Each structure stands twice: as structure tokens, then as C-alpha cells.
Length: 262
Length: 195
Image (cartoon, rainbow over all chains, first blue to last red; front, side, top):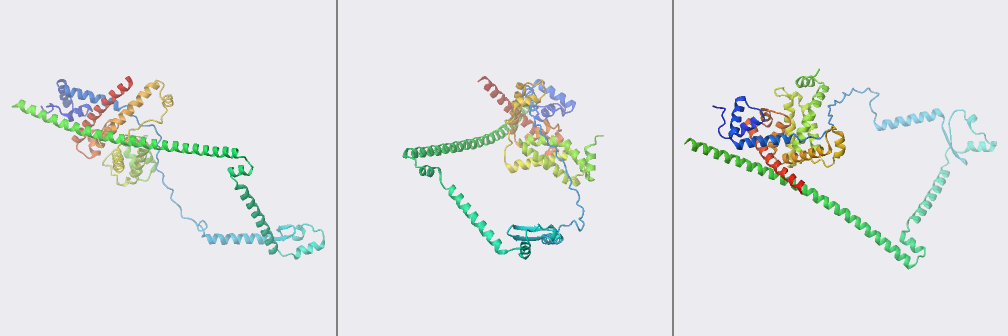
């Protein structure tokens, strides 16, 4: 007798629905829903809901997560250890100096410009001189003539300044002033101004349209968020109402049972 | 030879990270499905999957094998989902496949499925997702664990740390709300088709 449903037991209905009850409990529920139309409708409705729930698919995506361990770092040898910057710079200067010394590097500045020479056999590798005087003059020339370098830098500076000034002059005239300088008539000038005004209006209209689009999108997203919130609240309200209705129904069933017993 | 979860856990605990990768491969999709249906957001569901396995990997030494490995990671994932919902204080969003080209999708599906069937299936999926989003969190989680992960009442009770009867009540109430909502949606869809 313990397995017999007295009244409508929702927990047993759920266990029956999901097939998580004993054969005896199952038989009791089946006997009950054969005579209780309300529970029979409920079970049938729940089965429909379960059928529709199976329609909810998740997106097919690639996940492919993996755990990757960092390889254990081996201690470095002394020659692999990184040197401080000052030591690296000193080493670079040393290497360059040694290289220049070995190559017998010589820098000369003369009438033909800067000349770099390397190698020990200087006499044989030097370009042949036209006369003994020029050869003697070249030998007497200091390695770097500072006055000549200064003159070269000053000339380059002046040239650059002149080029910058020319570029500045070319950039200044606008469309309107160009038209005026060209000796355009008043009508031409008016046409020019009208064109500029029209262009400005078009630009403003485009900006307005962009702003309007942005505002519409913002309103739409806010509306969607509000709708979701309202739906959530409605759902909770329905859940609470359903719960209250269930407890009322249980109480009525209890009263009916008690009154029948008496 | 396929190793059991417990064997893979034991190997992972001894430092074999490849065994843990096999566990990830086995469980990442169910965990993703759980997070996606609970939160309704694809990116956040991915984050939950990543964080779940990261926490599991870090906490392996604390896993004593009293529960199944799957129950353990389900619990981690559910807690992460709860944290996320609490932090964001947002309702789950019913995912809408707006960016999906149904014609392309139909070509990828089995040839028996027509574009009309596919559209109907997508509509139905959306309706169900919307209806589920209206349930209170705990009812929704109970239904997801039961319907899509085939857990027993007892397993859900253990995961949610509530008595068995509470799980049954949550399922009953959730199904009742879904029944009403889906009936309304059905009427509205019929009305829309007629108009």
C-alpha cells in the first residue's frame, strides 16, 4: 500500500517521467493517471516539452584546448650569460679598433673628396699620381681638414634651408586664394564659394546620418536588453505563481481527502 | 586501448600532461554545452571551459577520487557559471543565429534535410532557448543537467548540494513553466503564420 499514490504527487510524476522509479512505483503512478485527468494531461504535456527541448542544439565549434608544460630551463654556461650593455659597447669598440688596426685603415680628405684606404702595401695600392708634386702634397695633407668639413656642412645647411622655404611657399595657397590670384571674375568667385558651401552641407548631412544611425543602434540594443530583463522577471513571476498554485492545489486535495475520511 | 577517466587522472597526477589532454578532449564538449546552455553566450562558455580545465589541472593534487572526475569538473564548471551570473547580474541571453547563412548550413548538413526543415529547426531551437532563459537559474541548471547530460536525480542533488526532493521539485516547476511558455510561443507562431 505504500506505493499507492494518494492524491497527485508531483515528485512521483517527475520520477515516472524520467524513468527513475521502481516498478511498483511506476505501476502506482500509471494506475493514478488512468483515473486522474489532470495528472495525465500534465505527464503528456511534460513529454511534449521534453521532445521540444531536444531541439536545442549547441553550436559546432572547435575547442581543442591543451595543457602545455613549459620546458624546464637549463642553467646557462658562463659564455652564454648576457653581458651588461656597457660591456657589450666596450667589446664592440675593441673589436672595431682591432679590425681597423689590422686593416691599416686611413681616412683622407682632399680636393677629390673623402678617401678611405686599407691595407699595408700603401704605395702599390694607392692610385697613381699624375706628378710628384701632387703626390707630395697629398702626403702632406692632414688626415681630416676640419675647416673644409665645416665649409661643407655650412653649404649643405644653406641648401636645405632654401629647399624648405620653397616647399613652404608652394604649400600656402588654398583653393580660394588660388582662384583670386588667377584674376577670376566675381561670378567665378561666387561659383567657387557656392561649391564650397554645398560641399560643407553635404559633409554635415553625412555626419548627421552617421550620428542618427549610431543613436538608432544604441536605442535598439538597449531595447533588446530591456526585453531580456522583462522576460526574465516574467519567468520568475510565473515560477512563483505556479508554485503558489501548486501549494493551493495540494491544500485543497488534503482538505478533500480529510473531509472524505470523515 | 581506451583508458578510464580514473586511470588518466592517476597518470596526470604523476606528471603526464598528455593524459590530462586526453581528459580535456573527452570532456571539453559536454562542459562547453553545459556552459553555453546555462549562460547563453558563446564566448563566455569558451572562457568557462578554459577556466574549468585550468582549475582542474591545478587542483589535481587535491582530487582524492571520492567523486568521479566528471562530477568534479561539472561542479567546477557550474560554480564558474554561477559566479559569472552573479558577477554580471545578467539574464542568460537566448542565442539567436543571426549571422548564420542557412543556405550554406543546409549544404553542410545531411542531404535529407531541406532548407525549410533547417529553418524550422533553427526557429524551434531559438524558441526553446528563449523559454529556458526565462527560468530561474537553479531550475534551468537542473533541467539542463537532466535533459542534456543525462544525470540522475542523485547526481544533480550532489552537484547542486540540495536534497533529492528539491531536485524533483525544481524539475517539476521548471517543466511547468516551460510547458506554459512553449504553448504561448506556439500560439504566437501560428498567429504570425496566419497573418
